[in-house]
Every structure is written in structure tokens, then in C-alpha cells.
Amino acid sequence: MTAPPPEARIVVTGGVAAYDIRDFLTRAAVPFLYLDDEGPAEVAVCTFDDGRCLTSPSIQDVGRALGLVAPPSRPSYDFAVIGAGPAGLAAAVYASCEGLSTVVVEEWAPGGQAGTSWRIENYLGFPEGISGAELAARARHQAQKFGAEILMLQSLVEGHPEDGQFVGTLADGTTLRARAVLMATGVDWRRLELEGIDRLLHAGVYYGAAASEAPGVAGKDVFIVGAGNSAGQAALNFAEHARSVTILCRGEALSETMATYLCVRLEESPVIHVRVCTEVSGVGGDHWLRTITIRDNTTAAEETVPAHALFICIGGVPRTGWAEQDGVLTDQSGYLLTGRDLFDPEHNGDRKAWRLPRDPYPLETSQPGLFAAGDVRFGSTKRVAAAVGEGAQAVPLVHRFLGGR
Image 1: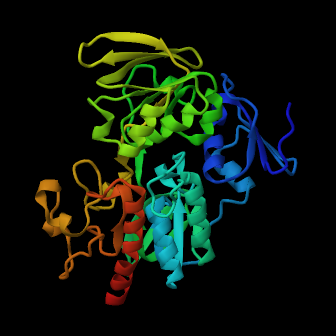
Image 2: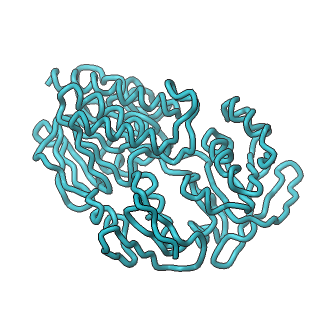
Image 3: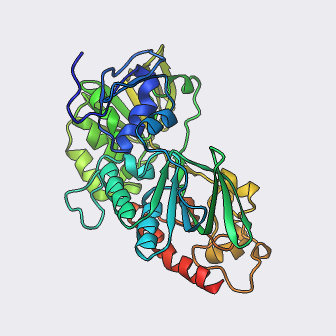
């Protein structure tokens, strides 16, 4: 067994069972050493640098052992941000630096979907690119420097207005109170509906393309489903390790949905192949993915090919399951309606849902004082820079709301 590097805080073993732990540690910027890259093992083991050992721990167990899980430190805050993706972290930075007592509640680790990006090259100020995890770590540090409190591995399960405040309940039963709230919960990856695919989840089948998986595909055949920037970035990352990387695109050309600079990079790589008008119609394997079946949508012909890993990056589903029970308006797909869109019946808006004599602020939902920003908001531009801009824009609107009251 190889000794862990001096900076590693945890040694992780456990094959498939350790995937979520590895993903969390990578995105939370916690140095660790992983000793197994594939196998049927159903037991994860974490050995910490102080000698403690946890067998089959939950992510919360690991977070607590690292001192990353804590309850709110205040009975009430000026501003609560739900979600620590680019929009939520931007809002936390600007709110806290302007003197608002601010808390951020994050179910997993800072960064959201952007936190899994290998390299973001079209973000202003980073001409050489920056990984999503590093960008999230910097933003998290910046928010905390200004006094924002970040509650990791916590989630909001219920919330309602009460006596001029928003009162929420976290998953551990803790009560959270704030005068204004920003929902920046983002989206989850859309799922592929294929027989047997759930059985191979984290055993060669992955939603998104976590950077932590790149070393494990060395010399092997990798497939990516998707045609957006996230798929292109993932392909370039895996191409540095894999024997071959194949992008499967349902459309007729990647250029329809992917940034030009990424399309050019993909064409230049001798390792990366693009197959258009195709989709995955089947997966096969015992305890690990071994094959995938690819359908040509033009001819309906199918072929089964060897595959070590399948990364699925096919768009998102908004994380707004709480909205219906809390009476917050969404469009037909579940995205939060804000501003004037609340009045547009074409998108499921309803003017009667707005109860105040003033018009809603641009990022305000049907519940006054509850704002939305980033990918979870109807009509948002699905880009990191756009999410950061909306998070920053939300702060002066919160000031207006608090001043108006």
C-alpha cells in the first residue's frame, strides 16, 4: 500500500461505494488519497490523518469528522442564500461585504454543476482557464473573508413567511430565520431512461463528469453523452488520460450547442471522436460497465461496443421540489418564475399570485422577499458568468426589499 502524500487528510478505499465520498472531497478541496479505482466493493473506508477510521460513513459523517458541518451561529440573519453555486456564492460575497449578515446553505459542496468543470476558459479574467472547483474554492474563501457563514452538507426541506421573516427547516431539524432569501439551488443532471443503467451508477455510469474520475480512465475507452460546453470540457479532460473519448450527440452538429473554441479543440485532438445523430440505447456489464449500445438515429442501426465509462451531460432538471408545497410559482418545467414573468400565463404565471400593490422586483418570486438567481430561475442564461451576474444583481434588490419594509 502506498503511503499517503503529506498533505492528504484522508485515505479513501472502497471501489464503487466510495464514489460520493471522493466526489465530495474533490469539490470541497480536501486533499485525499484514493487507493482503489474500480471494483464491486460495497464498503467504503476513510482513514483520517489523526488515526480515526470510519467504515461505510455517510457524507455527513465525513464532513463532521473534518469539521465542515455546523449549525447556524445566529438566531436570525438579514439574508439567507440557498445553494452555493456561482450565483449563490456571488450573492454571498456582495451581501456580506455590504454589511448584511449572510448565511449560505449548501446540500453538497460549493460550486454547483460548475464545480465539476475541468476547466472554464471563457470566464472573464481567466484567459488560461480555471477549474470549476478552484473557482468555487476562491469564491467560498472570499465570501467567508467578508463574514458570510457557509453551512455545508445542509439542505432546506421546508420554508414559509412568518412575522416578517422567512422561517425554514433544515434537513437535520434546525430552524433557519432570515429577512430575505435567495434561491440558487441550480439543477440536477437529466437522467437517461435505460434498462439496467441505475444498477451501474458510479460503476462506470456517471451523471456529469467529475474531474476526480479522470485518472481512473487511463488507457481505456470513454463515452460522453451530450453536446453542451460541459460535455466538451469533459472530453478534453479525459483525453489526457483515456485511450479514446467518444462524444455521442443527438443533433446534427456540436456547433449547434457548443462554444466554438471547444469545437475547435475537439477537432484538433487525435483521441476524441464525435458521432452525431446518435444516442445510447443500452448498457451492459456485471459489477462494472463493460459495453454500451449505440443507435444511429438516421438509419436506426445499432452496434454494441466496449466501454469502460459513460458520462452523461444532457441538461438539467431544476431543483425546486419544495416550491409547489410552499406555493411558489414555477413554469411548466419547474423553473422559478420571477419579476414580470409572474404575470405571463403562457409560462404558467398568474397575476393573482402576487399579493403586494408594488410590482415584483426583477429576480423576486411570487413570495415577496424570496428571490431566485442562476440556473434554477426561468429564463436564465445557463453560463457561469450569467449566474454570477444574477447573484450580484440580487443583492441591491434585497436592500430595496428590506428598506421598503
